[in-house]
Image (cartoon, rainbow, N blue to C red; front, side, top):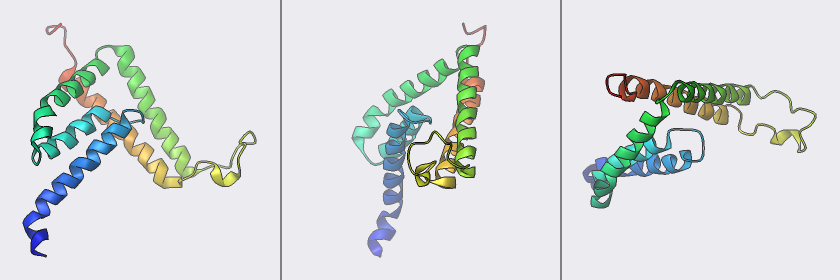
Amino acid sequence: MDFVRRNGKRIVLESLGWVLLAAGVAALVLPGPGLLLIFAGMALLATQYKWAERRLERVRSAALKTAAESVASWPRILLSVGFSLVIILLGILWGIRPDAPSWWPLADKWWLVGGWGTGGTLILSGLIALVMIIYSYLRLRPTKSKR
């Protein structure tokens, strides 16, 4: 028990850092703010590891650059917002889990597997994406005076 008391904070920070890093890598190909999650994970790991500290600034720069590019023009903003809303709507559909359509080739039990667990994750991803879009728009979008 003394080990946990002495090392509890380190264990929690390190575990959360690795989880965020893994989620960020997954979000590079799945819906979600991949680079921002990687940055958050690296920031936590940088408190424990020198290798993470050395790479943190590069990841931060890449995350902020990508976020700024995502709000550089109105078509990008509208496409990002639209995609986020589609993810949220898919999450709601997944949670409601309507009957499998007639074209579905597998057994009905394989239609929208996961129910509200999967749907809630999709909804959360869409909401996080919307918050990131708003943040990027307010903080990172170049104004006419900056262009």
